[in-house]
Amino acid sequence: MKILRKSIVFLIIFLISTEIIFTYAFPARYVYNQRINYEVFKDNVYSIELAVKSIKQTISRENIKNYYIFIGDSVGYGTPCPPDKTISSYLNTISKNEGKDVKFFNLALPSTMFGDYYTVLLLLKKYDVSIDNVILNFSYWEINAKTPTYWFNHYLKELDNNSYNKMVELGAIKEDSLWKNIKAEIYHFANRNIGIIGNSGFVTNKIKSITNSLLKESKPALSVWSSKADLKNAMTKPENRWYFSDKKFNLTENGIQIYFINKIIELQKDKNIIFILNATNNQLLENETAKQGYKDNIAAIEKLFNDKNAKFLNYNNKVDYKLFSDHVHLLPDGYAFIAQDLWNKFDKEI
Image (cartoon, rainbow, N blue to C red; front, side, top):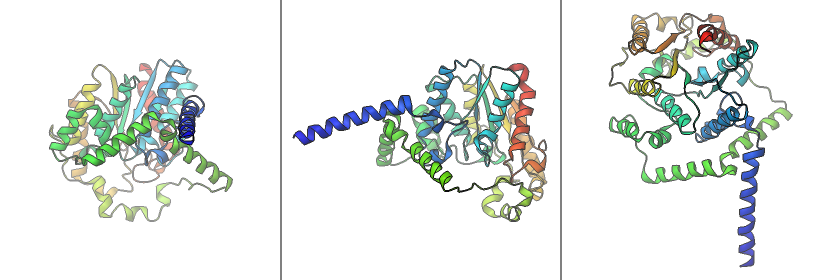
């Protein structure tokens, strides 16, 4: 019995100690360093809450009054560039150089859909992080995708159960089994409330990063799309061609993505949000993007947002093709161009 009591006491002391360490001593940059740590997030979607908490702590600690939240897909995230070469990081640099007291936080993630964007906004509200100023970027194919959420089914169910149930009824979301739901709830609770579990991925990632640095393992060099011999052929494969389909998009009110666009606009009523359509590498995809159906879909997307009186920017044909790394992602100078153009467009509002 003495051994059992000692073990219990030791466990309690250990948990309290680690909780204090992760609350007060664990470097926030491991969790959020100018954007979400995707290497951790892809294995644990609940780590987004730690990123949101980190942003909230930064806002409170630095007494930041004026800030924008950047949500979006891999282009907003900054693929394939490092954290300091993204649209949001360049905007922060411009803001500092211009002497403006405004910050930009990046919660964009690869593979996201409009249901994910909406859910991230709800999560920010839950943690009392202002969504008064939001920049939302998306790619052509996302607005016609059949999947409402790629990452955040669990959070959508928690934060807007009515929308979740509607997606289940429409067959857009497949409801998990009772046992899978219970496991998800337990895992979520542990990540939210037990520091050593919630932060374990960040600790492992940091150790891996240090190891790679000591072994001097180099990261792949960034290169322009035209230097990638197999890229053009890869984009003609069936699994990639749907990205730029010329089939007529369903942009009616019964469309799945339109449902969440409407929810976002409703949520952002009397707030500031700008929707950004990512640039497409029309030089690489000339056979696809030259089709009339593709052009009609682009025009329909513009009309959709204009009809809803939403702020909308279309970067198609606005970015030099030498600044692309592939079909849609940019090199650092490409992201810098978007950042400067955005700043020029809403400088007076800041």
